[in-house]
Image (cartoon, rainbow, N blue to C red):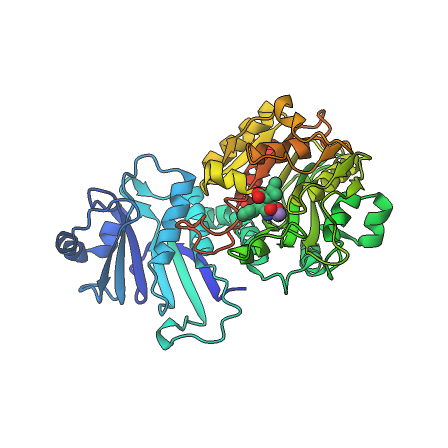
Length: 500
Ligand code: BES
Ligand code: MN
Ligand code: ZN
C-alpha cells in the first residue's frame, strides 16, 4: 500500500496546527463555519487574493504560509467555482484538489467541508473524503531513492471537518470500501509484468477471500477440460501459464441469479508473432486493466457488504512470441464450439473474452453481463481518453451505464453494432476470423466478434477501456498511471440496479 493516510471526520474547529484547507466560491465567499473559523484572517485572504488575482474559480488555489491570526502553519483556500449545483463528481474532485494542495512534507491537515450554501451534507462529505483518498494514492514501491525534499512523511492524517460527524462517518463507510477497490485495481494495472503474471494476479485475487468472496482459480488443465482453446491459444507462447479466476460475492438471496462482470486480463501484450513496434510497448503491462477493474469491483462490493449477488470472471494470459506461440492462419475451436481463424495474433483480447464470456453465461445465467477490455487502439482514435466505448445488445442496460457514468465521471459513449460490421469477420476457413481485415471501424468489428459469444437473451454490454484504463485518464482524483477506471462506475450501476 502507498504511504499511510489516516482520514477521519471531526467537528468544525479552528485547527491548532498543520495545514488548514477551506473552500470559497467564485465571488470569494465562504460558508458560515469557515468564516467563523477564519475570523480576522478572512481579511488576509481578501488582500492576498487581490495580490494573486485569485478569483475562486473551480480548481484554483491560494496558498498562505504562516497566516496571521491562525495557528495553522499554512492556509490553503480552494476555489469551488459556482457552488449552487455541485454534483457528486464535483465533491470528489474538491477532495482530490484539496489533497493535491497538501505539500509532500505536511503530515497533518484539516479540510473544512463547508461551502457558501452551507456545510456539506454527509453524502457530499463522504464523496470529498473519497477524493482525498484517491488523490493520496501513489505507486512508488520500486523507488529506492528520493531527493531529500521529496521524502514523504511516514503517515499523513487528514481531518474532514463537518457539521454532522456521525452521519458523515456512516456515509463514508461504504465509500471507503469502494475506494479500496479502486486502489486495488490501480495497483494491479501499475505492477510490471515480470511481477504480475497470470498466477500472481490469481494469487492477489485470492486476497478477496478474507472479505468473504469465494475465489476459484482454474489452471491450464481445467481450462483444457472446459475447451477454452481460444484463450489457451493466446497464452501458449508464454513461459507463464494461463489462468481463469472466478470471484463470487453472494450478498443477496441464495440461488438468485447474479450480475456478471468479465475482464480481459492480458498481463502483457507483445502482440505475439504479429509483434508490436517497440515504441510504447511498455504500456502493454496495463493490458489487464479490464480484469483489474473486475477484481477491484468485487473487492468494493464485498467490502461494503452490498446486498447483491455478483460474479467476476477474468481471463489471465500473457501474449508472447515464441516457438510454441500461436501463428496467423491457425484455427482454434472455442469453448462455444465455434471455430476461429487467427489472422493477427495481436487481436488476442477478443479470443480471451470469447471463451470467458461464454463460460460465465453458461455457468451463472446472469441477469446481465458487462465485460471490460483494453481491446482496441481504434477506440482511442474515436473517443480519446475521456469516454470508454460502450457496445450493448440492450437499451436499458446501456441507459443505466450512461447514467452511472454521468454520476461518477467515468463516462461511456455508446457505439453501434450491426450485421454489416459482423460480415467483416466471416472467414474463408472457419466460422469467423479474429480481425475485420481493414483498419476501419476496428473497435466495432472487435465488439462484433465478442457478440458472437453472447446469448442475446442476456442483456450484455462491452466496454472498450483502451483509452481510459491507464495513462492519460488523470484528473483531480487520480494522478496515477493505472486509473482504476470502471470500479466506481460499475459499483454505481450495481447499486442502482438492486437498490434504486
Ligand atoms: N491491447 C491492445 C489494444 C490497446 C492498444 C490497448 C493501446 C491499450 C492501448 C489489443 O490487444 C490490440 O493489440 N489490438 C489491436 C487489434 C488489431 C490487431 C486488429 C489494435 O488495436 O491495433
Ligand atoms: Mn493485442
Ligand atoms: Zn491486448
